[in-house]
Length: 244
Image (cartoon, rainbow, N blue to C red; front, top):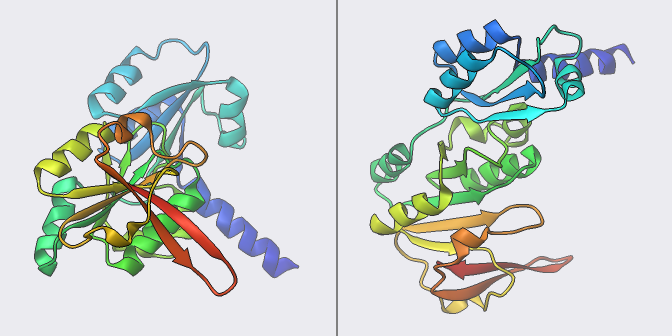
């Protein structure tokens, strides 16, 4: 039992590395250039003008939450109504993803996670991207889980090898990818069989959020629909794809 308890404590300590508690600690983290996914501020907290300004300049989302949420995440630490979630790994840029494809002498293969909120799911996507030879993953800054401890752990080390870029606007980024010659496919329940699609060349695959799927803004410029069929020994499932 002692061994199991020790392992649980190690996991908790590792997860705590994601959290930065306290106003001054968060401000200093921003100053140092540390990768921060988001900052949570207790509703009703005052005298945070400097922090809000610094977060805005650094492009870090700030979310107001109930004070009890801050206390729960701080786990006893004096957070002073402010808690930041730091990234478990440094983010890449979209240009770095293209550079990796060029380095390998391959057309870009990019996975675009459109609003995944569960760290286990994003970690699984990154792990799958590594197994499939994708050159990188793109996620949005807002309404998406970042590279936290759960994502890094679930990826089983893949986060160290697959560049993950975080962008302000997924729809705009997709337009930019198109301009760079990337064909975009997105999961959609109205898709048709994918077998007739030409998947050669530069490809971007959009994976939608849990429940909601691919967002309306991402789907609105759809050219045609495809449905990818995945056959397994125990089950036959489908992954619908929409060519955007």
